[in-house]
Image: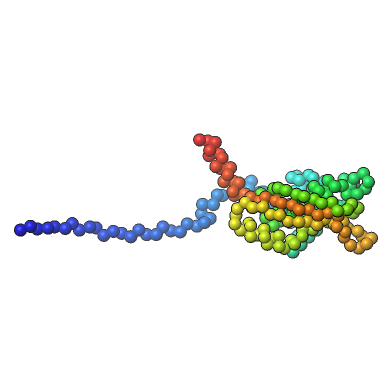
Length: 211
């Protein structure tokens, strides 16, 4: 007579699901310099006084030219380049170099106001078309500023590198005629990179260098 015996298996326990991780749990803590940079970035677009103070330290070209923000809203952006001696040429018209150089400054002011301190912004390409001489203060207007700002917000939401292209119309103020006449048009492209991405790249390079 044969007797068969069966070994009983211990019951298996169902593992408890791991707790969900908070997305911001592993976010690197900002350094003191990064917090200071973010504070100054917001301050520089607050009003013309702080814009001038920051330009004196970090952007002397804009400080010497005297370009100021007149209006920065979602629907409209306007910057004004004064008609002063340092911006004029020998025949008393606004110098082409001043109009061209401050195009990048004005466009950067508009972009920086919308991007804030989370993105590093670099001018990638710019084409300026001179239409007529400028004999008064130059006014920089971003064409379709509201649409450009909306497109910019969509790009920033992805938290990836991107290019943004927009057009500025440059006009001169004619007080005797009570209107503004267009003197130029600028097509400009900026490359925007999240600062967090730049920090990660620097960390990887540092890691590779230490191996």
